[in-house]
Length: 254
Image (cartoon, rainbow, N blue to C red; front, side, top):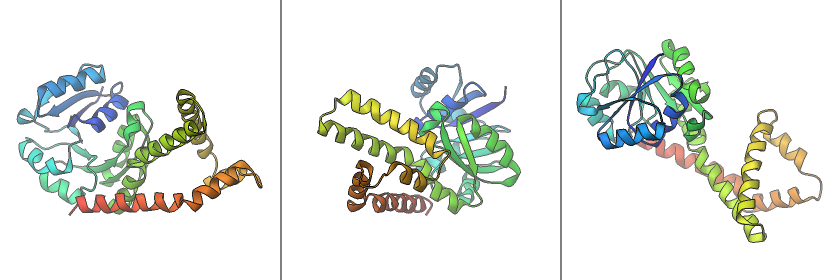
């Protein structure tokens, strides 16, 4: 079984490791052994744990999952040269990664939190020589899409990387609206969960505009609801959210 070394033990590292734990031997490097122990417990498999001060990445496949602000200090502590570095750091360019961490190959990856269920929509870009390997590796956490440029990856970060938070906000609002109208909270939540699951299946086979047209009958309830959303600027609000997220990703790279 192939090994993969995680640098960082936060939520995203754990989510990706959950998706990969049955396909790879996992090593995790962090600053605090208690947190590494908690990571292992949450992952529910035996892992190799190593403190950053004793970290050697020579010849390893490394998945970098630290905060962008910690890249410089982490890079100084690492020993050796990785075989392949995959970074999930938002807004951190390949040029910056090459400056701080030694590796033979570099790939940027942007998964999302659904990786913990093997359902991430992960985007990748970087050294073409490692395209196939990185795609196979990250497919363990869900679907994968290789992009042609870092600019596209930053846009994908704003969409698919941050997307679960946007959809969680929508789900919460829909459930709250149903409760306001008189539905029990548990029933509202169950209906919302089912709605998202079913809609994902529909969107996999149909363009969003055609799906909306199919649901929206003339003078019906859906038409009334969609008109209210348009009047409230829902479409523009989501576009603005992506623009703000992209601007933040670009700021992180400065």
